[in-house]
Image (cartoon, rainbow, N blue to C red):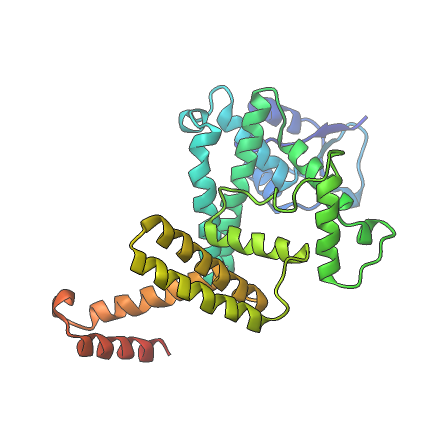
Length: 315
């Protein structure tokens, strides 16, 4: 008979060590972390490829994602971490956003080590939520993964079924149709799935794309620029009126039209604005360092000179 052992994350317990010290230890597959843990306790082992004897202990490495779930369970469970145990879904919302933005920064930096670390921090967030729900007797991380697998298969009939598609645009149209009807309810609005809590520029772009896929679209980009000029004139009229509500409304219309121009140009407006802000911030900080004068005392010509120097330094 062969004994099967799966090592839990963290220090090996005395009970586990007692089992491992009896008889031969065989690793199911090469695993550097498991080997290091066994080496630390001077436990000899061999790999399954060399065979396994009756009475041996077969050590099966846990997949890293499973280990992460177990670590979170340990933090949230009895004798775990007081800070983690005090968290709620509400208090964790800000960390989900913070980690997502740090992933974006890592992508821009082009540093794979930082990117890997920040993606790991981001993955932790849904696992925390899932395991908190598990403790409450609701769903868990496995349910999240299972539901996502089923959804991806269901919404990709051109991959997992017999549906044929001509291009990516048709894939998105099919996705919208499936999403509208998959819950067995009356088809919802194509815009119903756009989160209201989404950043406004991202939300505007998504609303614009979905409306266009449904057929609500200009004939060409020139028509969108005509709309831009129309909205610009209406903003000027609103400014002359002094009506704050009207000004806000018209500026919103103007911004949404710019988002549509970005969509027609194949540009993500959120990404374009974020990169522009990064450039502006770097240039402004360069200007701050390029003068000993109080910034508020600079003349327009001095500002222009500093700005041009900042642009040249960037190039």
